[in-house]
Amino acid sequence: MHQVKRIYLDHAATTPVRPEVLSAMMPAFTTVFGNPSSLYQSGLQAHQLMENARAKIADCIGADSTEIYFTSCGTESDNWAIKGAAQSHQGKGRHMVTSAIEHHAVLHAFDALAKQGFEITKLPVDADGLLDPEAVRSAIRDDTILVSVMMANNEIGVIQPIEEIAAICRSNQVLFHTDAVQAGGALPIDAHRMGVDLMSFSGHKLYAPKGVGALYIRRGVRIANFFDGGAQERNRRGGTENVPAITGFARAFELAIQEMEENSRQLIELRDALIDGILTRIPHTRLNGHPTRRLPNNVNVSIEFIEGEAILLMLDQLGYECSSGSACTSGALDPSHVLLALGLPHEIAHGSLRVTFGRSNTMDDVNRLIDDLEIVVRRLREMSPLYNENIFSVQN
Amino acid sequence: MQYSDRVMDHFMNPRNVGEIEDAEATGLIGNAKCGDIMKMFLKIEDGIIVDAKFKTFGCGAAIATSSMATEMIKGKTLDEALQLTNKAVAEALGGLPPVKMHCSLLAEQAVKSALKEYYEKHDLINDDNRHLFDKLNEDAHDHA
Ligand SMILES: Cc1ncc(COP(=O)(O)O)c(C=O)c1O
Image 1 (spheres, chains in turn red, green):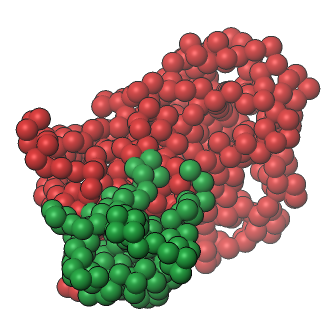
Image 2: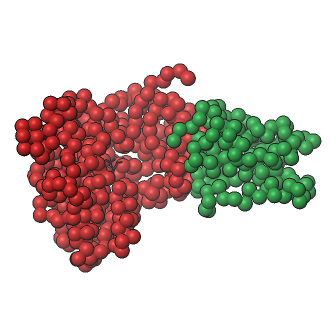
Image 3: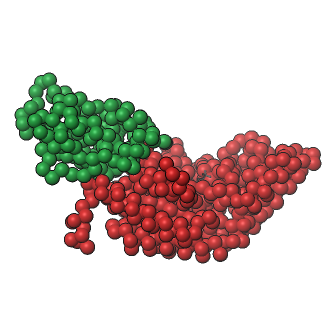
């Protein structure tokens, strides 16, 4: 097959490491390779690199550096926050509240707790994917110990009213965790002003390497340890820290904050041009998630009468790398729990396409994608027994 | 999960897409809720399948198995076509990822559901071939 230009459009899945980030990491691999817990020169230097990184990340999210704990990934941060809070506070009660559209790192952590006898309330979202903070207020009971609601959704990009939810939790003396894995570096975050207790981050979503994450734990908040071991991370998370990745994580986060305004403006232009192009040029399509209260880089559409994996596969052949909430992409039977939570019927949720832009994308990518997507959709609809052009041309 | 070259070929260039207006037999299998639907159309003359066409809503494997199944039964006698198995379809495609094997079962069922319509209409079902339709009772998704 002839070589096609590859266009990466799946930045919510992961991002490449930026050259500036890679070069910031290099010393920690080579010259400053010591164990940050060691007391000789190279150890102390590694420790210094790590503490500089901690301070930078704290700055990026309006926290104190003593409130930042490094982990191995976003999933670990979510698990630690949720299971740690459950274990620590089960004396007060065993009820926890979350939303129906959380990432599996959160939902499956709650599922595991449910098996241990915790009671989990999963709040529904509206057709735009938004959670009503008043629903959180109503769900809180005397025995509620934790509320966990993500800041921005990985599939539909919808941004939740985190400050309002945090305020409700605080006034009810319930811990509040937010999964900010998709929001980190993409949206302004001020931990202290927002009033959250626990907040998860991951490096590889913001141009740092895979295998590093962080958990913000507000000063004074108690959660049980998840990794027992050495005295690392102020005795709260055992395991020799991944100093190179941590260094890169901080550099990437810092750059993301510096460039956020300019970057968001560009991403929103691409996002809105793609949404507009798809909805106007391809009939029987709909946008999933709120049109404006969404991440600057996220587009998620349903394309009726065809199936998501088939769309992805054909787009891949044409050089585009994107994602879908289709069950067939994961081998599961049910399509994305997020799309179903919006109230989409199964058959429409099966035909969804997610495009998440990043630093490398241009308006030319958007225009090419719209042209090629139009062809792909037409070809797949021609094969689909659900699609009948004649019926629809009469209706239109 | 990686598809074989032959699956990709049958997905990107599917054979026999379409409908047959005056088909002697049609079969419909699957449902939109589960994410795949296959519709088969057979043109039958003198006990031979002279043409087969399909329309499929589904993933790459669903489209490729439909395409391959139609290729495998074209020109065959009805009794030969009735011997089609999902394994044979998958093998002809150079194998399928395990999570996609149900697509080949749907393709077998789509062919058999069309044949069943024809066999019933012409009163051709007998004790020798009845069991060949048993696969129609299996749920390709293991649950509804
Ligand atoms: C919202 C959200 N939470 C958690 C995770 C898990 O992060 P990680 O891949 O670092 O474990 C992801 C990434 O897929 C995510 O998008």
